Length: 237
Image 1 (tube, rainbow, N blue to C red):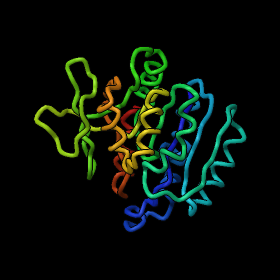
Image 2: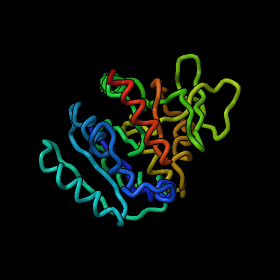
Image 3: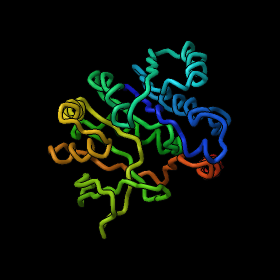
């Protein structure tokens, strides 16, 4: 399994709210958020890990360099400013052609137990083009709503909820090389948003299965840190 982490955002909202650390270094379960995510990825057959951070994150890079030497799989750190999450995805997408890949934003926080079940189910899934974690926990300023059919396949991504929407996107994506072919076409067409990419996947007929998580916390504000810590404390009880 290959993994990629998008952590190139500026985290400006948290800075304005008084959080001194860069978002990837905010501690959850006793270690930096990005370190916790790497631990989760390392728990299941990692073949490679690609991470993108921005040019101002020298302290994040130092942290990453301090831990990757002890890992038993190759890690590529890309340090580059991007215009947004989609450009960041383009930068790490060369990893996607190697085989099944899990892409995550650094600020998606979920339980270890649900992660373990998801990654094993994704590894065993041979019929679908993607397995996308979703949640009915909605605590996001601009959630991306997910429509599904009776079998759980994704039929639409919406900025506004429809009457039958139960889920939002969790910021984690289990993708296959088929998804990367669409990503290349999106780049040619000038698609600039991650939402646009997801909508293109559906429009081109790829089989994307929604994978429900009980809760995924998106850490965008200072208050979300407490929400994430409380959630993980509940998971560990």
